Image (tube, rainbow over all chains, first blue to last red; front, side):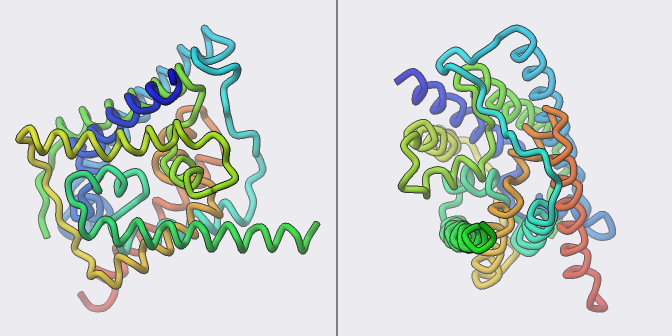
Length: 144
Length: 141
């Protein structure tokens, strides 16, 4: 129960942060990537604030504790190789973000204040995730 | 479409996003990456989805509650429905192969100084910039 409650609190703060910052507003996000046109540099402040807070917070946590409060270990990614999937997938993500103005972290909280057309984006994103997962597992089976 | 430059609100919102990531790591030992959290819920074999559902519910509920209390968040989606649907699909495929998005790689990964996340973040920032520039200025616009 602790783990669910702490995730709920973190989610509430995350969602509020996205809404206040403007990351859930596709028009604003797209303008960050348009310095030649209707440029809005706000996104740099979102990323800067989030990254600085997380970097300092992680440093304190990992420096002082061997495990989180409600679990036996920190669940950190173990993959370290930089491969075609990482680069190709990230490149593709940028294309989708660039045509829509939505990223996953921006779109989910946006569901709370602009359900439509956010839901359309998220349903299709879910479809993309499921399809890619299936393709990945097929590929793994072939190469195994 | 112009949007207002909001350095203070954006910085404050960004700090809240970071605070959420720190809380989730300190208490649950988990990365606050929206891709992995959302994708985890879509996996029926995943036994540990309840905390993910709680995080997602909180992320959606907080802005909804704020609006109910009188807050206003500006929102405009310049893309058409077809493009939003296509964009959603491409984002879904991309973040699955790329193992993360702006929150997972761009915030949590960079905060851990992960080389993978640095490569991912630089890559998607560049292709997003290229895509927006091509759409807005590439066709004689």
